[in-house]
Image (cartoon, rainbow, N blue to C red; front, side):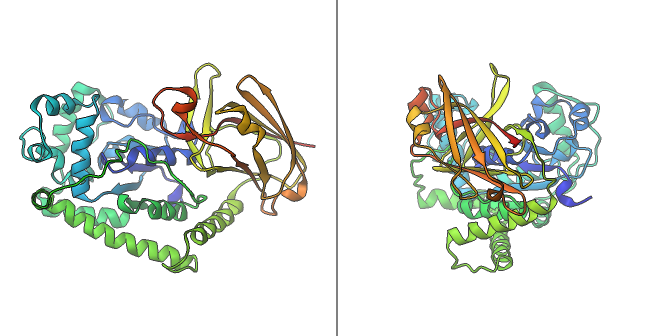
Length: 430
């Protein structure tokens, strides 16, 4: 079995950009093939989860996620500067009223300095990456008959920690350096855009031109020098792991550029073009070209500038919003025929967006028109045979004239920059 046929697990270390990353990562897997749980106490039956043969796990499972899969896992993760991670943990807990620590911090008027010293909170800013990733790593115990709930999780955690293979901090650090080297991919939050380029290269996915950071506090975090020194001491092993990972990341990124016949001086747009070319070559060579078919965002979303897929309970269908960039595209792989393409949108920020929409197929302008029913729209596109590439790529590009924050168009507290909501694409040969 090829390694990329094995399931993937994103080891989500809290406050390392995981919320934004998961919204992107989910695109590339069928919705039914993604484990819906991200916390141990939501798992319920371990054996049942294992029987589902999910292709993607993501969440706060530490290194013990292998318990949830009958197959070996491909590990991926994101690391962050330990000092920045500690500050982000404090500020997130302080401002988010839904966190357990918010009331404690607020009622005790805990400063950041207090937070890193207090008996109840200091563990949250001490070698958090090492502790998270080594939880259950290399576990040899069988938990198939266990039902995991908030109550049973406590005993599960104790059992895992007591049976850890690497008992000393030095052993755990050494093991994690090897873990980093064995990861199918890992990213560095401080180099997020480069990390995503490397992800797309490694996975053979189309490049991502723009991302929207979710669950982020934009106010700069100023940390006094004396606090930084204390945090460095508290995070002795995290700092070593982070330095090692940064060095390895630079090597991985340089290797990518060399394989793409590029250099570190190459422009961002040239890097993305090279990644796209590689993706098209890989995907086109292994994809069975379909003729007539109906696509929905439940399936993998190979394209760019789409937000996470969402479920519409009334329609009982998945959909996804375009954005945050103005040019969204989605790739379908089909035979070189003439097609009538129907694109259904269940919503848009305004009728003027649809009126001024520019639509291309592989950079060519097809004939098309639209009909509207309330907030819903149906686009009818006439695709000529010559518009489809010889490899079978049919790339539908939507160039949006305007975008808005979701909350400004529909109220609420959703800060995502969106355009229209895609429901389905139907290809019918003519």
